[in-house]
Image 1 (tube, rainbow, N blue to C red):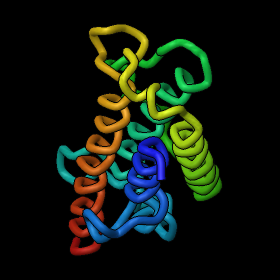
Image 2 (tube, rainbow, N blue to C red):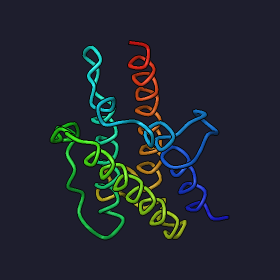
Image 3 (cartoon, rainbow, N blue to C red):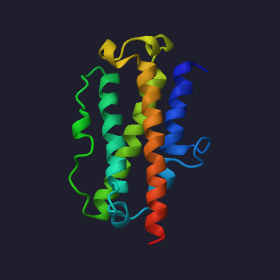
Length: 156
């Protein structure tokens, strides 16, 4: 198995289907969550919907580079989304999230292993490997927040 296949599968684990690290994943936490719960504010914490959109924002931004495009994402915009106002909007977002996550993983899988050690866009951002590993770690960080917020909301 190539290194890119291994790292693509690690990414799939946190978003789509794994239980090895956190005993859950984004899809398991979000697939049956209604839009009202997803958009409910708990104290000063971000909503589950905003955290999921935040991760999706970064997946799409990095995926664009993998497809030969430019890096257009900005940290200051990474929490700025129009509110989700219906179950249909939430369901549509989730489907896009799952599809984009799988496309991200597929693009990683298709990379030659040598690409992992190349500079990602600009040497100041490190290598492709550093950025993919960072994406996985970032996903686990926010997955933990989502899991906790979901528990807090269920105990209200």
